[in-house]
Amino acid sequence: MKQKISSDFKLGILGGGQLGKMMIQAASKWDIEIHVLDPDESCSCSALCHQFHHGSFKNYNDVLEFGRKVDILTFEIEHINIEALKVLEKDGIKTYPQPEALEIIQDKGIQKQFYSRHNIPTSNFHLFNNKKEILNAIHDDIIHFPFIQKSRKDGYDGKGVVFINDVHNLNRLFDVPSMIEEFIEIEKEIAVIVSRNENGETNTFPTVEMEFSSEANLVEQLICPSEIRTDLDHKAKELAISIIENLNMVGNLAVEFFISKNGQLLVNEVAPRPHNSGHQTIEANITSQFEQHLRAILNYPLGSTKLLSPSVMLNILGEPNHTGKVFYKNFETCLSKEGIYIHIYGKKITKPFRKMGHVTIVDENMEKAKEKAKFVKETLKVISND
Image 1: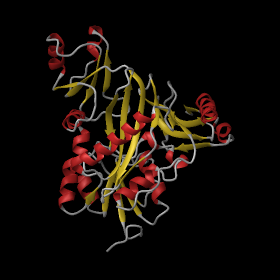
Image 2 (image 1 turned 90 degrees about the vertical axis):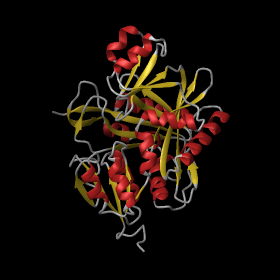
Image 3 (image 1 turned 180 degrees about the horizontal axis):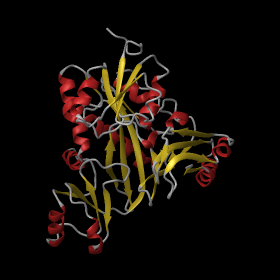
Image 4 (image 1 turned 135 degrees about the vertical axis):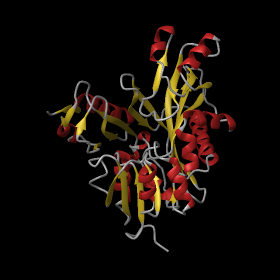
């Protein structure tokens, strides 16, 4: 039997982005050989993994060939070839999270139906095959303004999502299979990362509050611990555990919630992997989300998620109107302050609002942490250096 923390043991990661990079950094404390499959030969993981395999995680043959070279397979992006994963699973190669759970999560419509079946609170929704069906439903008074349209597949970081306020915005509709959600007036957006190993042990990380960039439609800043009511905090963690158990899923699951203006807690969507809402755990928690994901998929005891310190996490985004070779302006200025940890993902080219890194700010006093975060946000700029 191979020991999972020996260099004879091969862990494969589908996707070579920043989540994979931080997973490799967590695994480096142990003696695991990491293989990565990605179409970009200069991706964030390429310089860190033991073996890099050039290929597409969406391609059936690439995933199948890659999976047969490793002992356990995981992923840092959902948009991968499910059919290849199912074949590998039949061949005895464990994939965590499992393809059955991923298949539900990949399709936002099926994901919503899953919530309905299991009495998980979520916003009202309708499913449509194309733009014409949506227009007909508006005409027939089935759906009402304002509403949110989400493409059922391949959306991420705000892509594949559009807000339709009135009839004048209908030209913005996607002509793809999609989901229409009722518009919810939101008080706060929060997230809980829950982990589960093969033995069925579960553990949750402290709830975080997320603040979104209206321009980029992705997370700009989060704070931990959240400042929500205790009963909502407990309910969010209970729902996260319920979802991962009903999915019978192994690994990390990030569950994003809305808290509506009238106090309702509603599940927005989930991600079956380490997630942007858990980056601060590297410095601020006893166990990071990346080590916890490894513990879960290797079926080791889950680590403590206790906070070491309050924290704020900022995404480092490419500045508007800057595309080209990246330059981090005022990097040293920010690094000189206590409690500021800058993570650079290693992407060579910056683009407007592209995630280029993140900063975690820790302080015993949350207000001081927020002040430092404001300083970093105003000071650290990602620009092109062409």
